[in-house]
Length: 296
View (cartoon, rainbow, N blue to C red):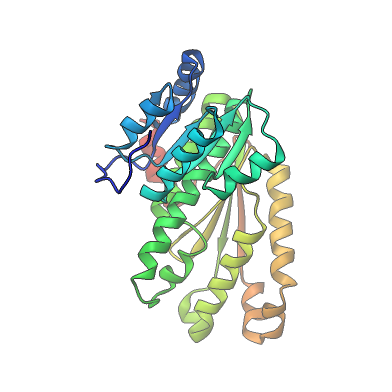
């Protein structure tokens, strides 16, 4: 049986993961994959063991197998969400989940589900998606207690901070180097606030809306000193150029930008740059220090 009431969480890294699976070989495999990517991983073999660990520690993400009967797994998911709403819960299972059960799992708090076996790349994609979602929840809570008095607060609802964006870039670069896989970075430089005046925040926010809405689920949108960056995993030079042209077309045909003369002018001054690893990998200035540190 699961305990009730709130627990007093001990702080842990935002990269911490609890992996709950009855098979030791899968625990070891997942641990190896995730630890190579810099995640802190702890394991449990059943629900009882998982709850003992979760009752004294905070995990950013929970990956669990389905443990019959349904009521036990359901109770664990609800308990975790009640006590730690920002924890992202993934079910990785070889159990065939019917439509009714699938719907109930998501109704009670499950965030994601995939069937085994699964590739390492897909596991990492699901995890990154979950950690992004957790980050958004925490930011929303923080913003609810603050007035919207700056462009950074407005944009934080839509995209990720420079610190988090750089961390994602670092992880993607490490993965690409280790597995010899491509990835791309799009940089969109916008006019300065001095050039746009009172229109700056509206223009910036609407661009953020477009980027967040139309990129792929696995892509990461961030910002740095008034510029946007978009990380495109598993994307070579040709794919990055297609993505860039698509976004530029969306911007040019956007109703708000077309109806505002200042916005139309500013759209023409946007500067797009595409950087692809390993084909054309020239690290932008704002990421050089981090890449140099990675190379040491």
